[in-house]
Each structure stands twice: as structure tokens, then as C-alpha cells.
Image 1 (cartoon, one colour):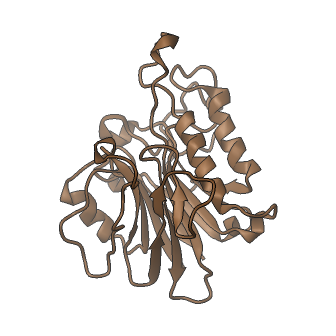
Image 2 (cartoon, one colour):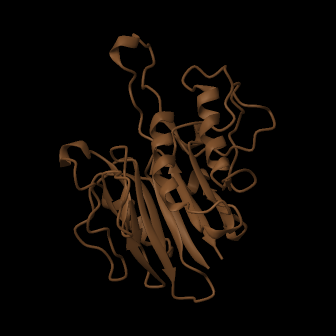
Amino acid sequence: MIKVVCWNIAAQKRREVWNLLFEMDADVALLQEVKSFPADVPPDVELDSRPLCEPWDDKFFDRWPTVVRLSSRVKVEWFKRTWPFHTLKSNEIGVSGIGTIAVAKVTSCDTEIRPFIVASMYARWMFPNPSTNAKWRVGFSDGSAHRIISDLSAFIGSHDPSTHRILATGDLNTVYGVSTDCPQDLPERNQSIFERFQVLGFEFVGPQSPYGRMANSIPKYLSPDTKNVPTFALHKKAENAVDQLDYVFASRGFHESVQTCALNRIDEWGPSDHCRILIEVS
């Protein structure tokens, strides 16, 4: 079994975040909103030597997604991020959004588990063009999410989803199943994200209840029978968390080998405004 942890670390530089990650006995970390790497890491930990997209100036990368190897039980091969040209090398991924995706190939030392692709996703908020005179406070996230899906499409080369082994997870900054009562979200546009994953042969594998603590009260913009588990806590107050913003998708067929769980109990939340998600691949 390979243990993967997905976590938006909220651009924190504190060593506490990395120490908690290194102590989890996981194999791979898919992180979002990384601002810098620690100066020293345990012997088995390997960081992406090229975490930024080559064509863009570093000033654009105030925070970025990345893939980290946490144990010697796996081998990680990172895809170099570059412009989304129509033809790319086998070790490259075309990235159409700044700081939105990191992709790597994971190979287990356990030969019974076949290699698979992992993607760390971060759907950054984007502001509407000033000509719209929009009143949206933080903008919209579905534009970034669709750029991510477009970039992932390069790893899909067959009509048969079972020929792919892709695990895509991260912070999409959207609430699954939200209704029109939510002032921030755009329900139809948000739903199109999940529908597009489905069309491309991905299954939504959670985390959903009972694999995580549900909110103390269901927000009015969600159906009473929602299975959402909160993964985001405003002002890092885990006890008040209500919104799920972090999700896991896996290629249809491969998804049957993937189990997810939100580590969102108050006593296990951690120092970020997002909780960790534990993913087991067998």
C-alpha cells in the first residue's frame, strides 16, 4: 500500500508544518500553496528540484503546488512544467495557469502496485476583468480548475479510462453540491468542474462522510443529505469548519484501489486553514 497525503499548507514557512508532514509515515505528499522548501529534510525525503514553471518569472510564484517524496518505499519522477505547446517531451507537462498544478510519476518498491501519475491541484482565485464591474470579493476559481483539467488531459490518450492510472487531488476552492443560496460560489459553473472530470474518465473518490467529520450544522446552501466533510476552516478554527474545498479524483477503474479520509477532527487538524487528506493506494 502507498500512502499519499494531500494538504494545502497555506503558504506557511513554519517548520511545524513540515515536521508534522515528515512524522506521518506517508510515502508521497501532494501540497498546495507552498511558499518555500525547508533548508534541511530527513534522508528519505526528496523535493522537486524544479518546482517552478520554467518560462515564468519567479515573481508570479508567491505560492505553488508541488509533489514531495516522503519515503524510500517509492520512487518519484517529476514532470518539468513548461508552456502548453502542442507537442511536449515525455518528461514535461504543459501548464496553462500560473501556480496551479504539479505532476509526477510514482513507482512503488512493491512490484504488485503498478506505477501511477499524481497531480497536486490548486485552483487559484481569479478576478473578473475590471470592465465587468463585478462585486465578487475574491473572484472565481472555476477558471483555474478548468485550466488544470485541460493540462491533465495531456495524460489521457485513450477512450478507455481503465488504461490510465491518475490520482488528482487538491484544493479546488469550490464547494461540491452548492446551491444558489451561497453568495460566493457559482453553482452551475462549480458543477461543471465535477462533470468535466467525469467526462474525462475520472471518478470522484472523496473524501465524503463517513470518512471524515461532518460539520456541526449543515449550511443552508447544501442539501440536508450532503456527505461533504469540511476541509477548510476560516481563521484556522477547526471547530467552526463547514466547507469542503479539497477533493480527490482517480481514473475510472484505478479508483477502486483508492481510499480517502479527511483528517479533520479538531485534535488532528494541524496548523493550516486546510486539513490533511490521507489517501491509500493498494
